[in-house]
Length: 310
Image 1 (spheres, rainbow, N blue to C red):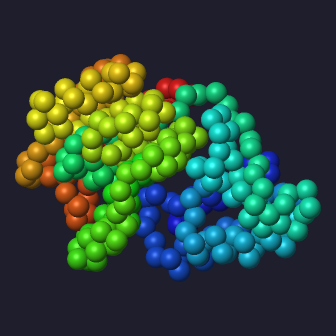
Image 2 (spheres, helix red, strand yellow):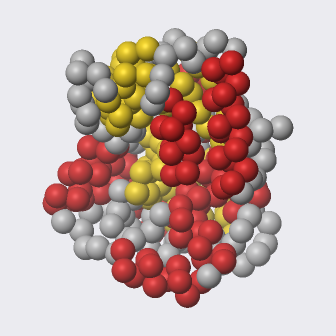
Image 3 (cartoon, rainbow, N blue to C red):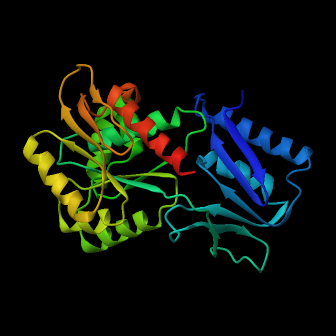
């Protein structure tokens, strides 16, 4: 079983990690190269003026793709989810020997019809928003055939998906890097983050918002389609419910966050009603966030919603 998948459709090469099999970087590089060589032998990658590459890549895999594909194509363009406009997938020309596709130019491709999920995960500080998002991301990625969950870090708190694994392996380093990367809010960042959300075009987009119902969050969350509310007290829950209601964001889940290691309490409902209940122990450094019952429930709801939109 290969650790990295590639398939060609028209002039776009779709790539992605095998979500059911973890692999080291050297294995990923070998499998990616083998898959490209197989497509060449089969007469699928025959070369041409332009090839678009769509999907997640590690830095090492990107080098392999460039080395194998550059001799075949006049230009190669890579998908960038943040550089786009609604209703389109946008590719940046990253390699070019073709004057028709200048280096750094953008190629916009219209996408078809179904609505996109742009889910703002909101809650006050220390409720575990980033951990919830990471758990949802892990849970969705573990499902074969599920859409790729794109995470937008729309708050300048210095966190990212890298932080959680680093926290597991080296807590001191994780906190040091987080402190170095943390920045203050400003209007420019809020406007940029709002544009990221507006332009996001993956089927599932998870938005890590700031910890207050602030003007900056209002600007950013106005571009979302749904919300997940994480709270510790009834007063917090009502504040975020009112904030989301003002923005017209229907909540997909309204979840109480508690300390401890008890089993989550999940109240499922129809797709038209939010999931409610309690999630326990959302804290950085836990390796298997995806196994929490609440996180599994939210992940499956998001996958189901994208399936029903097709």
